[in-house]
Image (cartoon, rainbow, N blue to C red; front, side):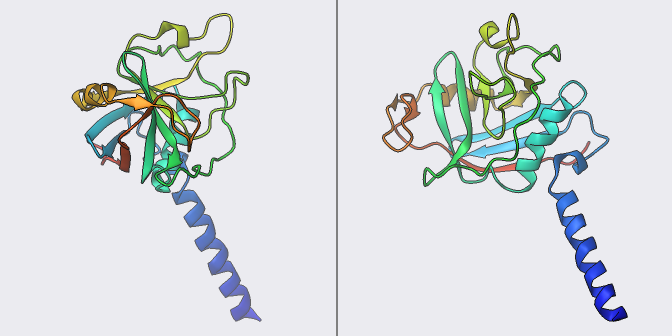
Length: 199
């Protein structure tokens, strides 16, 4: 009986450790500016996250990263001079399984300026962001909060903006698989997203 209890306790502790290791709040928990590298089929981009002003959003994003849920996904929306969006669909066009929606931190003082990363959401639901994110290619003040909730910025690109510029110029069109009008005709893949070591 004691052996069975010890075994059950070990399994429980292992499960709790695994769960902790796959949640963003446990990833570099004291680092207010963690960095991630997004390796794409067109090159790599490094993003510095702002946990000080967007803790909920950063922890949510890091959870998807540590579980590998952004690996082998699509950049599924490209609008030159506006934004590039990804994180929602695998390369076979199936949806990435989302966690529960998070609180919208768009009132954190960070603006949708050129080179910033923000969470996508449904237009009709302020607190609907899950896994999809976008990178601003311009100063998109229309995405900031005003009379209504905006889109929560949670970091900025610090390396690889030339890669984003190259992406912004690819030919896009309507995708039958996704039903979106501005999908790259030649697939752009997020190969992996890596959390960089603390400096």
